[in-house]
Image 1 (cartoon, rainbow, N blue to C red):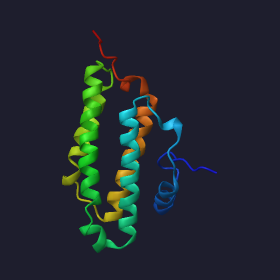
Image 2: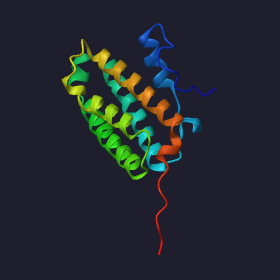
Image 3: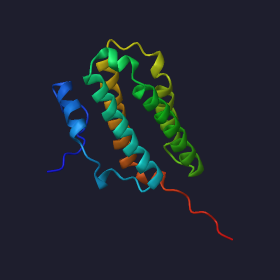
Length: 148
């Protein structure tokens, strides 16, 4: 049976949320009809899984692992691409996306109590991000190119 990512806050135990995410698989219902963004979402999922695995090796390993920084750079670039698409599409959700982007850009200034809190934050952020895009997938369709 294929496990899919569950809606945030369905878990009483955050560790169950980590386990569920590690065992999750990409499902076609997650597609937003933009191949580039769908592929990037798959990469983000893989990087989050790697971050969870790094964390499971201990806090010192997690501290020196480059996975977290690579993930943050990838997401920053991913959000910029999405914003560009929304701008090109004159999207009604561009303002909302800019707000999400600004929050994510400020992540380094957030004082987390622990590495575990960082991971839970990323899991919840990504879940909300993906669910919002699924709901608004028509906003992310690439514009057809004019061929002459």
